[in-house]
Length: 230
Ligand SMILES: Cc1cc2nc3c(=O)[nH]c(=O)nc-3n(C[C@H](O)[C@H](O)[C@H](O)COP(=O)(O)OP(=O)(O)OC[C@H]3O[C@@H](n4cnc5c(N)ncnc54)[C@H](O)[C@@H]3O)c2cc1C
Image 1 (cartoon, rainbow, N blue to C red):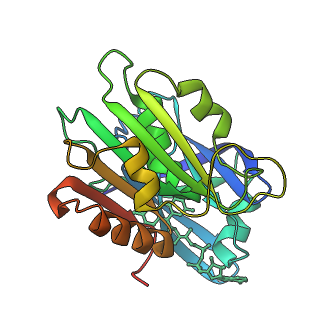
Image 2 (image 1 turned 90 degrees about the vertical axis):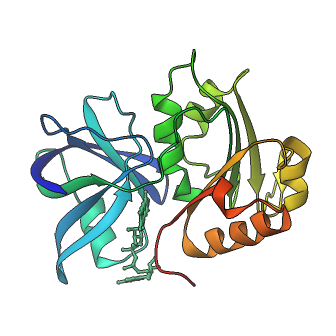
């Protein structure tokens, strides 16, 4: 992976604890939607490097990552970045990319697992985009990263199924966790769908069990686990 010293060009809060950070895009830096970059920060605990999927589109003039702030030394440093600060990135890398000629894609994602997916959705040419269903799990309706961008992309080619774990008020979408029953209501797994799964390890493990229950063969699933197996 080629490394680059880049400037921060801005931050954007997606929810109280979900932050996007934008960096200048090095000349010649090309990535495929779904890939990630490695970000190195000088934290209070020394230099640390962590992978983050690009959440920007392949054609954007900047690079963007999006993360949940956790209180770790790395995330505290990330949250304190200001425009003009310089950081080290290396990339791109990763194989969570849509194979050419896939015509039907079902995304099973939770929380910040949306990052590689929003990059794909933002990058697709509407004229050639596959038919897609996004199953998007979040804890509460009040914090759904990129909810407005996703709503703007929803249409003939993209169906969005929000699934929230808990809702104090009225909520018209699905409730609980993404389950095989919910998936079957929108998608026939035997009908040529490619399943793309991304998110924190606990969520990915749950989605792997969901794919087994749906009898999706391993060859029809692409999986990105945002951390070590649980
Ligand atoms: C291919 C790939 C792509 C990825 N893409 C993304 C992405 O797009 N977005 C994203 O957010 N992540 C992504 N990740 C995961 C990311 O690299 C980090 O591992 C993850 O965000 C957790 O980092 P952390 O610093 O919050 O927690 P870690 O330091 O890894 O610690 C784990 C947990 O411990 C707790 N913790 C640690 N230190 C403290 C502290 N000092 N005080 C309180 N609590 C603490 C936090 O709850 C934290 O969540 C990706 C991972 C991979 C492998």
